[in-house]
Length: 225
Image (cartoon, rainbow, N blue to C red; front, side, top):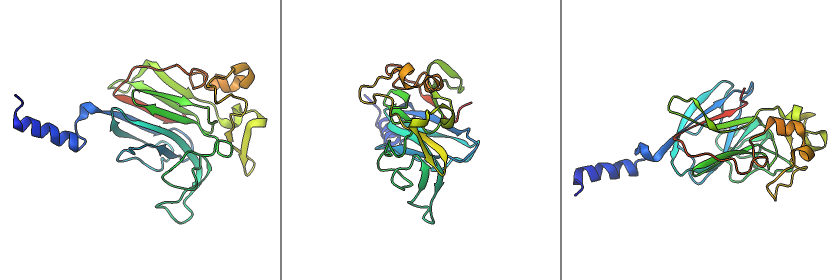
């Protein structure tokens, strides 16, 4: 029979989100040379989620073990005098909102997204490309596992074919996935773009079935080296 005291302590931990065995840690870092405003779509935005990351900034988040979310990066942003709710971005914009309620229009605002889906994760370029990203499983010492590395490392201006470029003030801020069959979930790297595939070899849809077992720790990086 379970002790009433132990049962009460366990219930308290569960109700207050302190039952660590049901959580995992995500270390978020910005290695870009410019500020990045992370965007998130989730039914459970974690406590401590930061709306802006300065160059070189990093921090950690605790999320539930079964957490599901879509995350992407925005840059070239301004609050236009309303820092609590408004954010207008050159790239990755989601309706001029600080906290996104919907994904960007992929034709006007193509974006690289990371999908956390319960016990799996991926970097996905089916909505386009705007920022290099890395996400992967790590151990307790934050060393990367050989399995579970998903990344795009190229700069959008370098890898995007001219026909697919989206520009603001003559600056390339995104790459449309117009040459990829986003609905079937498969791309032919030779038809799409050899440089794009070279920069994103592990991204969906080039490797749509590339998943790995769950870990309690993830590393998430904007502009990985």
